[in-house]
Image (cartoon, rainbow, N blue to C red):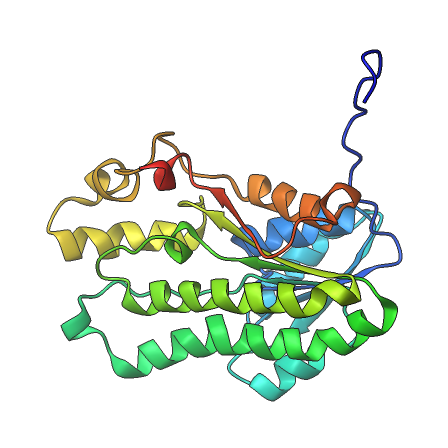
Amino acid sequence: MSATSTPGPVPPADLHGRTALVTGAAGGIGAAVALRLAAAGATVRAVDRDDDGLTRLAERADGLPGALQRITLDLTDLDAAEETAAGADILVNNAGIQLVRPLEDFPPDVFATVLKVMLEAPFRLVRGALPHMYAQGWGRIVNISSVHGLRASPYKSAYVAAKHGLEGLSKVAALEGAEHGVTSNCVNPGYVRTPLVEKQLADQAEAHGIPAERVLTEVLLKDTAVKRLVEPDEVADAVAYLCGPHASFITGTSLAMDGGWTAH
């Protein structure tokens, strides 16, 4: 770069003509991502088992440059999940569930369901999306992981195991997809202002034996330097960046949005 040249602004993702699939799209991070990608011009397949939530999301998306298609689907139906991903240019694996319990009290059936929704389903979705991505020489896989994909916390055995597995799956997809123009990355937020986190306040209060009002500062944000929750729109902007023109060389990595948690 010459001494007189200055870098231009990072252009926003222009996703006109692209089809994006977002799981867990009825609320929280998923809804923010679906709206952000539709605002960039993408046709968004919004996948969730909450049909009412998808209806509300479609109302919010009305008037955006892109289109929003509602797909009511329980991701434990793995065959249907794989079929739904066919033809997607962008895949955002976001859907998640959580239960906070000590290991000795953790229900085995819930553990299996968490891994099915948060690890097996992403594998099947990636498997369904890759043939189209490979054929056109372009694709973006963005896995909404978590700081818990990089760190562990007590009482979250299933969630931590699933997120650590998702990190590995994402890296394998990055290595295999590189020669086909497909990138695969994780976005790793700390605690995000979503209904899933709000439910944790009560669960963590019971697990730790402290009032719910103390859980946020003394448990959830204890290891975070920036003492606030992440906003869903912040995560959505990170996803859009990874789909945009300046991120073509970013693959196989994890973007920590954790307020300094992993700096310890």
